[in-house]
Length: 558
Image (cartoon, rainbow, N blue to C red):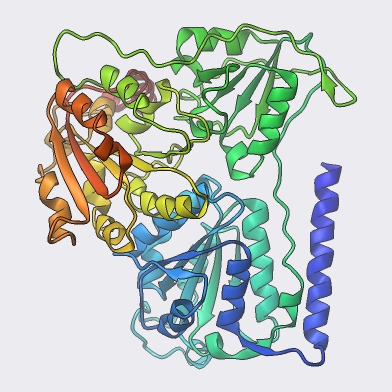
Protein backbone atom coordinates (compact mmCIF):
# COMPACT_ATOMS: atom_id res chain seq x y z
CA UNK A 1 0.00 0.00 0.00
CA UNK A 2 2.91 2.35 0.79
CA UNK A 3 4.33 1.84 -2.69
CA UNK A 4 0.95 2.54 -4.27
CA UNK A 5 0.60 5.74 -2.21
CA UNK A 6 4.07 6.85 -3.22
CA UNK A 7 3.28 6.28 -6.90
CA UNK A 8 0.01 8.17 -6.59
CA UNK A 9 1.83 11.14 -4.99
CA UNK A 10 4.44 11.05 -7.75
CA UNK A 11 1.72 11.12 -10.41
CA UNK A 12 0.04 14.05 -8.67
CA UNK A 13 3.35 15.94 -8.49
CA UNK A 14 3.85 15.43 -12.22
CA UNK A 15 0.37 16.79 -12.92
CA UNK A 16 1.05 19.86 -10.77
CA UNK A 17 4.37 20.51 -12.51
CA UNK A 18 2.66 20.32 -15.88
CA UNK A 19 -0.09 22.65 -14.71
CA UNK A 20 2.45 25.22 -13.55
CA UNK A 21 4.18 25.03 -16.93
CA UNK A 22 0.88 25.56 -18.71
CA UNK A 23 -0.05 28.58 -16.62
CA UNK A 24 3.37 30.15 -17.04
CA UNK A 25 3.67 29.30 -20.71
CA UNK A 26 6.98 28.87 -22.50
CA UNK A 27 8.57 30.74 -25.33
CA UNK A 28 8.20 29.29 -28.81
CA UNK A 29 5.41 26.93 -27.75
CA UNK A 30 3.07 26.28 -30.67
CA UNK A 31 -0.66 26.75 -30.25
CA UNK A 32 -2.97 23.79 -30.77
CA UNK A 33 -6.75 23.27 -30.84
CA UNK A 34 -8.23 21.87 -27.65
CA UNK A 35 -9.73 19.07 -29.77
CA UNK A 36 -6.33 18.31 -31.28
CA UNK A 37 -4.76 18.24 -27.84
CA UNK A 38 -7.29 15.63 -26.72
CA UNK A 39 -6.58 13.51 -29.79
CA UNK A 40 -2.84 13.79 -29.23
CA UNK A 41 -3.23 12.45 -25.70
CA UNK A 42 -5.45 9.57 -26.88
CA UNK A 43 -2.93 8.70 -29.58
CA UNK A 44 -0.21 8.74 -26.94
CA UNK A 45 -2.21 6.11 -25.04
CA UNK A 46 -2.24 3.86 -28.10
CA UNK A 47 -5.76 4.61 -29.33
CA UNK A 48 -6.10 3.90 -33.06
CA UNK A 49 -9.89 3.60 -33.32
CA UNK A 50 -12.63 5.93 -32.08
CA UNK A 51 -16.22 4.71 -31.86
CA UNK A 52 -19.45 6.69 -31.87
CA UNK A 53 -22.18 8.36 -33.90
CA UNK A 54 -22.09 11.83 -35.53
CA UNK A 55 -24.30 14.54 -34.06
CA UNK A 56 -24.52 18.29 -34.58
CA UNK A 57 -22.65 19.03 -31.35
CA UNK A 58 -19.64 16.86 -32.23
CA UNK A 59 -19.32 17.36 -36.00
CA UNK A 60 -16.60 20.02 -35.81
CA UNK A 61 -14.50 17.84 -33.56
CA UNK A 62 -15.15 14.93 -35.93
CA UNK A 63 -13.35 16.85 -38.67
CA UNK A 64 -10.25 16.72 -36.50
CA UNK A 65 -10.78 13.02 -35.83
CA UNK A 66 -11.23 12.15 -39.49
CA UNK A 67 -8.10 14.10 -40.44
CA UNK A 68 -5.99 12.60 -37.67
CA UNK A 69 -3.03 10.56 -39.00
CA UNK A 70 -3.29 7.61 -36.57
CA UNK A 71 -6.81 7.58 -35.09
CA UNK A 72 -9.47 6.05 -37.32
CA UNK A 73 -13.11 7.08 -37.01
CA UNK A 74 -15.07 3.82 -36.97
CA UNK A 75 -18.62 5.15 -36.83
CA UNK A 76 -21.35 2.90 -35.44
CA UNK A 77 -25.03 2.26 -36.06
CA UNK A 78 -26.02 3.58 -32.64
CA UNK A 79 -24.38 4.86 -29.48
CA UNK A 80 -25.11 1.76 -27.41
CA UNK A 81 -23.23 -0.41 -29.88
CA UNK A 82 -20.45 2.17 -29.98
CA UNK A 83 -20.01 2.02 -26.22
CA UNK A 84 -19.89 -1.78 -26.39
CA UNK A 85 -17.25 -1.55 -29.13
CA UNK A 86 -15.10 0.84 -27.09
CA UNK A 87 -15.38 -1.58 -24.18
CA UNK A 88 -14.29 -4.57 -26.30
CA UNK A 89 -11.41 -2.59 -27.79
CA UNK A 90 -10.06 -1.67 -24.35
CA UNK A 91 -10.34 -5.25 -23.06
CA UNK A 92 -8.23 -6.65 -25.88
CA UNK A 93 -5.72 -3.80 -26.19
CA UNK A 94 -4.33 -3.84 -22.67
CA UNK A 95 -2.48 -0.69 -21.66
CA UNK A 96 -4.68 1.43 -23.94
CA UNK A 97 -8.21 2.78 -23.53
CA UNK A 98 -11.45 2.69 -25.49
CA UNK A 99 -12.53 6.00 -27.03
CA UNK A 100 -16.21 6.89 -27.51
CA UNK A 101 -17.70 10.05 -29.03
CA UNK A 102 -21.38 10.96 -28.74
CA UNK A 103 -23.51 14.05 -29.05
CA UNK A 104 -25.23 15.99 -26.26
CA UNK A 105 -28.19 14.38 -24.48
CA UNK A 106 -29.76 11.93 -26.88
CA UNK A 107 -26.46 10.38 -27.91
CA UNK A 108 -24.73 10.19 -24.57
CA UNK A 109 -27.78 8.77 -22.80
CA UNK A 110 -28.02 6.04 -25.44
CA UNK A 111 -24.45 5.05 -24.58
CA UNK A 112 -25.01 5.03 -20.81
CA UNK A 113 -25.73 1.30 -20.53
CA UNK A 114 -22.43 0.47 -22.19
CA UNK A 115 -20.52 2.93 -20.02
CA UNK A 116 -22.17 1.52 -16.90
CA UNK A 117 -21.05 -1.97 -17.95
CA UNK A 118 -17.49 -0.74 -18.42
CA UNK A 119 -17.59 0.85 -14.96
CA UNK A 120 -18.98 -2.34 -13.40
CA UNK A 121 -16.34 -4.54 -15.01
CA UNK A 122 -13.45 -2.05 -14.65
CA UNK A 123 -12.76 -1.27 -18.30
CA UNK A 124 -10.98 2.02 -19.20
CA UNK A 125 -13.21 3.91 -21.64
CA UNK A 126 -13.03 7.64 -22.40
CA UNK A 127 -16.50 9.02 -23.18
CA UNK A 128 -16.34 12.34 -25.03
CA UNK A 129 -19.64 14.20 -25.37
CA UNK A 130 -19.92 17.05 -27.84
CA UNK A 131 -22.05 19.71 -26.09
CA UNK A 132 -23.51 23.17 -26.88
CA UNK A 133 -21.20 26.17 -26.98
CA UNK A 134 -20.29 28.05 -23.80
CA UNK A 135 -22.70 30.94 -24.46
CA UNK A 136 -25.62 28.56 -24.91
CA UNK A 137 -24.72 26.76 -21.71
CA UNK A 138 -24.73 30.13 -19.93
CA UNK A 139 -27.96 31.57 -21.38
CA UNK A 140 -29.81 28.23 -21.56
CA UNK A 141 -32.04 28.71 -24.63
CA UNK A 142 -34.76 26.15 -25.42
CA UNK A 143 -32.35 24.09 -27.47
CA UNK A 144 -32.96 20.71 -29.14
CA UNK A 145 -31.68 17.68 -27.20
CA UNK A 146 -32.41 19.49 -23.92
CA UNK A 147 -35.17 18.57 -21.48
CA UNK A 148 -36.89 21.87 -22.17
CA UNK A 149 -36.42 23.14 -18.61
CA UNK A 150 -33.00 24.80 -18.79
CA UNK A 151 -31.13 21.99 -17.06
CA UNK A 152 -28.06 21.73 -19.24
CA UNK A 153 -26.20 19.82 -16.53
CA UNK A 154 -28.69 16.95 -16.25
CA UNK A 155 -26.66 14.62 -18.44
CA UNK A 156 -23.44 15.44 -16.62
CA UNK A 157 -25.13 14.50 -13.35
CA UNK A 158 -26.14 11.21 -14.95
CA UNK A 159 -22.58 10.60 -16.15
CA UNK A 160 -21.28 11.13 -12.61
CA UNK A 161 -23.04 7.92 -11.58
CA UNK A 162 -21.24 5.75 -14.16
CA UNK A 163 -17.78 7.28 -14.59
CA UNK A 164 -14.86 7.57 -12.21
CA UNK A 165 -14.15 11.25 -12.96
CA UNK A 166 -15.43 14.00 -15.24
CA UNK A 167 -13.82 16.92 -17.07
CA UNK A 168 -16.40 19.61 -17.81
CA UNK A 169 -14.37 21.81 -20.13
CA UNK A 170 -15.29 25.50 -19.81
CA UNK A 171 -12.17 27.50 -20.71
CA UNK A 172 -8.79 27.39 -22.41
CA UNK A 173 -6.80 27.92 -19.21
CA UNK A 174 -7.59 24.59 -17.60
CA UNK A 175 -8.66 22.46 -20.60
CA UNK A 176 -5.36 20.66 -21.09
CA UNK A 177 -4.87 19.98 -17.39
CA UNK A 178 -8.44 18.69 -17.06
CA UNK A 179 -7.99 16.37 -20.04
CA UNK A 180 -4.78 15.01 -18.56
CA UNK A 181 -6.38 14.54 -15.16
CA UNK A 182 -9.25 12.35 -16.34
CA UNK A 183 -7.16 10.38 -18.84
CA UNK A 184 -4.77 9.57 -16.02
CA UNK A 185 -7.72 8.49 -13.87
CA UNK A 186 -9.01 6.29 -16.68
CA UNK A 187 -5.76 4.35 -16.92
CA UNK A 188 -4.87 4.27 -13.24
CA UNK A 189 -8.31 3.27 -12.00
CA UNK A 190 -9.34 1.13 -14.96
CA UNK A 191 -12.73 2.86 -15.08
CA UNK A 192 -14.61 5.01 -17.62
CA UNK A 193 -14.23 8.80 -17.55
CA UNK A 194 -16.33 11.55 -19.12
CA UNK A 195 -15.30 14.69 -21.01
CA UNK A 196 -17.64 17.41 -22.31
CA UNK A 197 -16.32 19.27 -25.33
CA UNK A 198 -18.27 22.46 -26.22
CA UNK A 199 -18.54 23.17 -29.94
CA UNK A 200 -16.63 26.45 -29.69
CA UNK A 201 -13.98 25.18 -27.29
CA UNK A 202 -13.01 22.29 -29.59
CA UNK A 203 -11.35 24.84 -31.91
CA UNK A 204 -10.06 27.22 -29.24
CA UNK A 205 -6.28 27.56 -29.23
CA UNK A 206 -4.13 26.54 -26.28
CA UNK A 207 -0.41 26.00 -25.79
CA UNK A 208 0.93 22.64 -26.89
CA UNK A 209 3.63 22.82 -24.25
CA UNK A 210 2.15 20.10 -22.02
CA UNK A 211 2.51 17.58 -24.83
CA UNK A 212 6.31 17.81 -24.44
CA UNK A 213 5.95 15.86 -21.21
CA UNK A 214 4.30 12.48 -21.33
CA UNK A 215 1.13 12.09 -19.31
CA UNK A 216 2.13 9.96 -16.33
CA UNK A 217 -0.07 7.07 -15.28
CA UNK A 218 0.08 4.16 -12.89
CA UNK A 219 -1.55 0.77 -13.35
CA UNK A 220 -2.61 -0.58 -9.99
CA UNK A 221 -1.61 -4.17 -9.29
CA UNK A 222 -4.18 -5.88 -7.15
CA UNK A 223 -2.05 -8.67 -5.69
CA UNK A 224 -2.66 -9.99 -2.21
CA UNK A 225 0.33 -11.84 -0.83
CA UNK A 226 0.49 -13.67 2.48
CA UNK A 227 3.28 -15.61 4.15
CA UNK A 228 3.67 -19.30 4.91
CA UNK A 229 1.35 -22.22 4.13
CA UNK A 230 3.75 -25.14 4.15
CA UNK A 231 3.80 -25.06 0.36
CA UNK A 232 0.12 -25.99 0.15
CA UNK A 233 -0.70 -22.99 -2.07
CA UNK A 234 -3.20 -22.43 -4.86
CA UNK A 235 -3.41 -19.30 -7.02
CA UNK A 236 -6.89 -18.08 -8.00
CA UNK A 237 -6.79 -15.50 -10.80
CA UNK A 238 -9.76 -13.25 -11.48
CA UNK A 239 -10.90 -10.28 -13.56
CA UNK A 240 -8.72 -7.58 -12.02
CA UNK A 241 -5.52 -9.37 -12.98
CA UNK A 242 -6.54 -8.63 -16.58
CA UNK A 243 -8.11 -5.22 -16.03
CA UNK A 244 -5.09 -3.87 -14.15
CA UNK A 245 -2.60 -5.33 -16.61
CA UNK A 246 -0.68 -7.67 -14.31
CA UNK A 247 -0.98 -10.79 -16.49
CA UNK A 248 2.77 -10.80 -17.22
CA UNK A 249 3.57 -10.53 -13.50
CA UNK A 250 1.08 -13.31 -12.79
CA UNK A 251 2.76 -15.55 -15.35
CA UNK A 252 6.18 -14.87 -13.81
CA UNK A 253 4.84 -15.68 -10.34
CA UNK A 254 3.36 -18.98 -11.52
CA UNK A 255 6.46 -20.15 -13.36
CA UNK A 256 8.80 -19.21 -10.52
CA UNK A 257 6.72 -20.89 -7.82
CA UNK A 258 5.05 -23.74 -9.64
CA UNK A 259 1.87 -23.11 -7.68
CA UNK A 260 -1.30 -24.70 -9.07
CA UNK A 261 -3.53 -22.06 -10.61
CA UNK A 262 -7.25 -21.82 -11.27
CA UNK A 263 -9.37 -18.98 -12.65
CA UNK A 264 -12.74 -17.53 -11.79
CA UNK A 265 -15.07 -17.12 -14.81
CA UNK A 266 -14.22 -13.43 -15.24
CA UNK A 267 -10.52 -14.31 -15.10
CA UNK A 268 -10.68 -16.88 -17.91
CA UNK A 269 -7.67 -16.43 -20.26
CA UNK A 270 -5.64 -14.56 -17.60
CA UNK A 271 -3.63 -17.79 -17.46
CA UNK A 272 -2.42 -19.83 -20.42
CA UNK A 273 -4.93 -22.69 -20.36
CA UNK A 274 -2.39 -25.08 -21.90
CA UNK A 275 -0.07 -24.53 -18.91
CA UNK A 276 0.45 -27.86 -17.13
CA UNK A 277 -0.23 -26.33 -13.70
CA UNK A 278 -3.56 -24.82 -14.75
CA UNK A 279 -6.55 -26.71 -13.38
CA UNK A 280 -9.62 -24.97 -14.83
CA UNK A 281 -12.44 -22.73 -13.58
CA UNK A 282 -13.37 -22.33 -9.94
CA UNK A 283 -16.87 -20.92 -9.43
CA UNK A 284 -17.89 -21.99 -5.94
CA UNK A 285 -20.45 -24.78 -5.72
CA UNK A 286 -20.87 -24.78 -9.52
CA UNK A 287 -17.27 -25.97 -10.01
CA UNK A 288 -16.43 -29.43 -11.23
CA UNK A 289 -15.98 -31.59 -8.09
CA UNK A 290 -12.24 -32.14 -8.58
CA UNK A 291 -11.64 -28.39 -9.01
CA UNK A 292 -13.77 -27.54 -5.99
CA UNK A 293 -11.87 -30.03 -3.80
CA UNK A 294 -8.40 -28.84 -4.87
CA UNK A 295 -9.13 -25.14 -4.34
CA UNK A 296 -11.12 -25.35 -1.14
CA UNK A 297 -8.76 -27.81 0.59
CA UNK A 298 -5.63 -25.70 0.03
CA UNK A 299 -4.08 -24.10 3.11
CA UNK A 300 -3.51 -20.88 1.19
CA UNK A 301 -5.32 -19.22 -1.68
CA UNK A 302 -3.27 -16.52 -3.36
CA UNK A 303 -6.17 -14.47 -4.71
CA UNK A 304 -5.20 -12.12 -7.53
CA UNK A 305 -7.73 -9.60 -8.81
CA UNK A 306 -10.77 -11.05 -7.06
CA UNK A 307 -14.24 -9.88 -8.06
CA UNK A 308 -16.87 -11.91 -6.24
CA UNK A 309 -20.09 -11.15 -8.11
CA UNK A 310 -22.96 -13.65 -8.14
CA UNK A 311 -22.32 -15.25 -11.54
CA UNK A 312 -18.56 -15.11 -10.93
CA UNK A 313 -18.71 -16.89 -7.57
CA UNK A 314 -21.43 -19.50 -8.00
CA UNK A 315 -24.01 -17.27 -6.37
CA UNK A 316 -21.60 -16.38 -3.54
CA UNK A 317 -20.83 -20.04 -2.72
CA UNK A 318 -17.05 -19.74 -2.27
CA UNK A 319 -15.87 -22.02 0.55
CA UNK A 320 -12.37 -20.68 1.14
CA UNK A 321 -10.77 -19.87 4.51
CA UNK A 322 -9.92 -16.21 5.01
CA UNK A 323 -6.52 -16.53 6.74
CA UNK A 324 -3.74 -17.69 4.38
CA UNK A 325 0.04 -17.18 4.15
CA UNK A 326 2.83 -18.01 1.70
CA UNK A 327 6.52 -18.52 2.59
CA UNK A 328 8.82 -16.28 0.51
CA UNK A 329 12.56 -15.61 0.94
CA UNK A 330 14.76 -13.41 -1.26
CA UNK A 331 12.59 -13.79 -4.32
CA UNK A 332 12.24 -17.54 -3.89
CA UNK A 333 9.18 -19.38 -2.66
CA UNK A 334 8.83 -22.94 -1.44
CA UNK A 335 6.00 -24.84 -3.07
CA UNK A 336 4.91 -28.41 -2.92
CA UNK A 337 4.31 -29.92 -6.33
CA UNK A 338 0.64 -30.41 -5.60
CA UNK A 339 -1.14 -32.52 -8.16
CA UNK A 340 -3.22 -30.58 -10.67
CA UNK A 341 -5.78 -32.65 -12.62
CA UNK A 342 -5.34 -31.82 -16.33
CA UNK A 343 -7.83 -29.30 -17.71
CA UNK A 344 -8.78 -30.84 -21.03
CA UNK A 345 -11.88 -31.07 -23.18
CA UNK A 346 -13.44 -34.48 -23.72
CA UNK A 347 -15.89 -34.64 -26.62
CA UNK A 348 -18.61 -37.04 -25.44
CA UNK A 349 -19.82 -39.94 -27.54
CA UNK A 350 -23.53 -39.23 -27.96
CA UNK A 351 -25.83 -41.61 -29.78
CA UNK A 352 -27.86 -38.99 -31.62
CA UNK A 353 -26.72 -36.32 -34.10
CA UNK A 354 -28.30 -33.40 -32.24
CA UNK A 355 -25.96 -30.52 -31.39
CA UNK A 356 -26.13 -30.52 -27.61
CA UNK A 357 -24.26 -28.11 -25.35
CA UNK A 358 -22.45 -31.01 -23.70
CA UNK A 359 -21.00 -31.90 -27.12
CA UNK A 360 -20.76 -28.46 -28.72
CA UNK A 361 -18.33 -26.73 -26.35
CA UNK A 362 -15.70 -29.50 -26.15
CA UNK A 363 -15.89 -29.84 -29.93
CA UNK A 364 -15.43 -26.10 -30.41
CA UNK A 365 -12.34 -26.12 -28.19
CA UNK A 366 -10.62 -28.28 -30.82
CA UNK A 367 -11.27 -25.53 -33.38
CA UNK A 368 -9.59 -22.77 -31.39
CA UNK A 369 -6.06 -21.65 -32.27
CA UNK A 370 -3.34 -19.82 -30.32
CA UNK A 371 -3.90 -16.04 -30.12
CA UNK A 372 -7.59 -16.31 -31.00
CA UNK A 373 -9.86 -13.68 -29.45
CA UNK A 374 -12.94 -15.50 -28.17
CA UNK A 375 -16.07 -13.54 -27.20
CA UNK A 376 -18.94 -15.22 -25.36
CA UNK A 377 -22.37 -13.66 -24.89
CA UNK A 378 -24.11 -13.61 -21.52
CA UNK A 379 -26.13 -16.79 -21.08
CA UNK A 380 -25.53 -20.17 -22.67
CA UNK A 381 -22.27 -19.11 -24.33
CA UNK A 382 -20.53 -17.55 -21.33
CA UNK A 383 -21.45 -20.55 -19.16
CA UNK A 384 -20.78 -23.22 -21.79
CA UNK A 385 -17.25 -22.11 -22.59
CA UNK A 386 -16.14 -22.17 -18.94
CA UNK A 387 -15.68 -25.94 -18.98
CA UNK A 388 -13.28 -26.09 -21.95
CA UNK A 389 -9.64 -24.97 -22.22
CA UNK A 390 -8.51 -22.16 -24.51
CA UNK A 391 -5.24 -22.26 -26.49
CA UNK A 392 -2.01 -20.52 -25.56
CA UNK A 393 -2.05 -16.69 -25.79
CA UNK A 394 -5.77 -16.57 -26.51
CA UNK A 395 -7.92 -13.72 -25.21
CA UNK A 396 -11.35 -14.30 -23.68
CA UNK A 397 -14.08 -11.67 -23.38
CA UNK A 398 -17.36 -12.00 -21.49
CA UNK A 399 -19.48 -9.53 -19.53
CA UNK A 400 -20.23 -11.72 -16.54
CA UNK A 401 -20.87 -9.04 -13.91
CA UNK A 402 -22.89 -6.45 -15.86
CA UNK A 403 -24.52 -9.07 -18.09
CA UNK A 404 -26.15 -6.85 -20.72
CA UNK A 405 -27.36 -9.13 -23.49
CA UNK A 406 -26.23 -7.99 -26.93
CA UNK A 407 -22.98 -6.57 -25.54
CA UNK A 408 -20.83 -9.04 -27.44
CA UNK A 409 -21.80 -7.81 -30.91
CA UNK A 410 -20.43 -4.29 -30.54
CA UNK A 411 -17.64 -5.64 -28.37
CA UNK A 412 -16.60 -8.03 -31.13
CA UNK A 413 -16.16 -5.09 -33.50
CA UNK A 414 -13.89 -3.31 -31.03
CA UNK A 415 -12.08 -6.53 -30.16
CA UNK A 416 -11.40 -7.35 -33.82
CA UNK A 417 -9.96 -3.89 -34.48
CA UNK A 418 -7.78 -4.11 -31.37
CA UNK A 419 -6.70 -7.63 -32.36
CA UNK A 420 -5.24 -6.18 -35.57
CA UNK A 421 -3.20 -3.70 -33.56
CA UNK A 422 -1.99 -6.44 -31.21
CA UNK A 423 -1.14 -8.99 -33.94
CA UNK A 424 -3.61 -11.50 -32.58
CA UNK A 425 -5.32 -14.24 -34.57
CA UNK A 426 -9.00 -14.73 -35.41
CA UNK A 427 -11.90 -13.13 -33.55
CA UNK A 428 -14.66 -15.65 -32.75
CA UNK A 429 -18.06 -14.72 -31.34
CA UNK A 430 -20.62 -17.01 -29.70
CA UNK A 431 -23.99 -15.32 -29.35
CA UNK A 432 -27.57 -16.48 -28.89
CA UNK A 433 -30.30 -15.66 -31.37
CA UNK A 434 -32.14 -13.54 -28.79
CA UNK A 435 -29.09 -11.49 -27.81
CA UNK A 436 -28.03 -10.89 -31.40
CA UNK A 437 -31.39 -9.29 -32.22
CA UNK A 438 -30.63 -6.47 -29.77
CA UNK A 439 -27.48 -5.16 -31.48
CA UNK A 440 -27.40 -6.85 -34.87
CA UNK A 441 -26.87 -3.59 -36.79
CA UNK A 442 -23.17 -3.61 -35.90
CA UNK A 443 -22.56 -6.49 -38.29
CA UNK A 444 -22.85 -3.86 -41.03
CA UNK A 445 -20.05 -1.84 -39.42
CA UNK A 446 -17.90 -4.97 -39.36
CA UNK A 447 -18.44 -5.37 -43.09
CA UNK A 448 -17.63 -1.70 -43.72
CA UNK A 449 -14.44 -1.77 -41.64
CA UNK A 450 -13.23 -5.04 -43.15
CA UNK A 451 -12.94 -7.07 -39.95
CA UNK A 452 -13.61 -10.78 -40.38
CA UNK A 453 -14.89 -12.44 -37.23
CA UNK A 454 -16.45 -15.89 -37.20
CA UNK A 455 -19.88 -15.56 -35.61
CA UNK A 456 -21.62 -18.63 -34.23
CA UNK A 457 -25.32 -17.86 -33.70
CA UNK A 458 -26.81 -20.38 -31.28
CA UNK A 459 -30.38 -20.74 -32.54
CA UNK A 460 -32.41 -22.21 -29.69
CA UNK A 461 -35.60 -20.23 -30.31
CA UNK A 462 -35.37 -17.58 -27.63
CA UNK A 463 -33.87 -16.61 -24.30
CA UNK A 464 -32.58 -19.89 -22.90
CA UNK A 465 -30.92 -18.45 -19.81
CA UNK A 466 -34.17 -16.69 -18.93
CA UNK A 467 -36.13 -19.93 -19.47
CA UNK A 468 -33.96 -21.63 -16.88
CA UNK A 469 -34.25 -18.74 -14.46
CA UNK A 470 -38.04 -18.54 -14.75
CA UNK A 471 -40.82 -19.10 -17.26
CA UNK A 472 -39.48 -22.10 -19.16
CA UNK A 473 -42.59 -22.34 -21.35
CA UNK A 474 -43.70 -18.68 -21.16
CA UNK A 475 -44.21 -16.72 -24.37
CA UNK A 476 -42.17 -13.77 -23.13
CA UNK A 477 -39.04 -15.90 -23.56
CA UNK A 478 -39.86 -16.60 -27.23
CA UNK A 479 -38.54 -14.53 -30.15
CA UNK A 480 -39.31 -14.23 -33.85
CA UNK A 481 -36.96 -16.49 -35.79
CA UNK A 482 -34.94 -14.57 -38.38
CA UNK A 483 -33.48 -15.82 -41.64
CA UNK A 484 -29.94 -15.61 -40.27
CA UNK A 485 -28.19 -16.77 -43.43
CA UNK A 486 -29.73 -13.87 -45.38
CA UNK A 487 -28.78 -11.24 -42.84
CA UNK A 488 -25.35 -10.16 -44.07
CA UNK A 489 -26.67 -9.49 -47.57
CA UNK A 490 -29.25 -7.11 -46.11
CA UNK A 491 -26.66 -5.38 -43.93
CA UNK A 492 -24.25 -4.51 -46.72
CA UNK A 493 -22.73 -7.52 -48.48
CA UNK A 494 -24.94 -7.10 -51.53
CA UNK A 495 -22.90 -9.23 -53.93
CA UNK A 496 -21.81 -11.86 -51.42
CA UNK A 497 -18.08 -11.15 -51.69
CA UNK A 498 -17.49 -9.88 -48.15
CA UNK A 499 -19.03 -12.71 -46.17
CA UNK A 500 -20.32 -16.27 -46.07
CA UNK A 501 -23.24 -17.69 -44.09
CA UNK A 502 -24.00 -21.26 -43.08
CA UNK A 503 -26.60 -23.26 -41.19
CA UNK A 504 -25.55 -26.45 -39.42
CA UNK A 505 -28.33 -28.74 -38.27
CA UNK A 506 -26.41 -31.61 -36.70
CA UNK A 507 -23.02 -32.80 -35.42
CA UNK A 508 -21.92 -34.06 -38.82
CA UNK A 509 -22.56 -30.74 -40.60
CA UNK A 510 -20.83 -28.71 -37.90
CA UNK A 511 -17.81 -31.03 -37.80
CA UNK A 512 -17.48 -30.90 -41.59
CA UNK A 513 -17.53 -27.10 -41.49
CA UNK A 514 -15.01 -26.81 -38.64
CA UNK A 515 -12.60 -29.10 -40.47
CA UNK A 516 -12.82 -27.03 -43.67
CA UNK A 517 -9.51 -25.17 -44.06
CA UNK A 518 -11.12 -22.34 -46.01
CA UNK A 519 -13.62 -21.74 -43.23
CA UNK A 520 -10.95 -21.94 -40.52
CA UNK A 521 -8.77 -19.40 -42.34
CA UNK A 522 -11.39 -16.68 -41.68
CA UNK A 523 -10.59 -14.66 -44.80
CA UNK A 524 -14.10 -13.15 -44.88
CA UNK A 525 -16.70 -12.39 -42.22
CA UNK A 526 -18.58 -15.65 -41.54
CA UNK A 527 -21.87 -16.33 -39.78
CA UNK A 528 -22.80 -19.85 -38.70
CA UNK A 529 -26.35 -20.56 -37.55
CA UNK A 530 -26.12 -23.49 -35.12
CA UNK A 531 -29.43 -25.28 -34.59
CA UNK A 532 -29.77 -26.42 -30.97
CA UNK A 533 -32.60 -27.83 -28.83
CA UNK A 534 -34.82 -25.17 -27.29
CA UNK A 535 -34.45 -26.35 -23.70
CA UNK A 536 -30.86 -27.58 -23.73
CA UNK A 537 -28.26 -25.63 -21.72
CA UNK A 538 -24.70 -26.00 -20.41
CA UNK A 539 -24.14 -27.75 -17.08
CA UNK A 540 -22.92 -24.62 -15.28
CA UNK A 541 -25.88 -22.53 -16.44
CA UNK A 542 -28.37 -25.08 -15.12
CA UNK A 543 -26.75 -25.05 -11.69
CA UNK A 544 -26.44 -21.25 -11.60
CA UNK A 545 -30.07 -20.82 -12.70
CA UNK A 546 -31.24 -23.09 -9.92
CA UNK A 547 -29.29 -21.05 -7.35
CA UNK A 548 -30.50 -17.72 -8.79
CA UNK A 549 -34.08 -18.91 -8.93
CA UNK A 550 -34.01 -19.68 -5.22
CA UNK A 551 -32.48 -16.26 -4.52
CA UNK A 552 -35.07 -14.43 -6.64
CA UNK A 553 -37.87 -16.29 -4.84
CA UNK A 554 -40.26 -16.04 -7.78
CA UNK A 555 -42.19 -18.96 -6.37
CA UNK A 556 -43.50 -16.68 -3.63
CA UNK A 557 -45.29 -14.60 -6.28
CA UNK A 558 -47.24 -17.54 -7.69
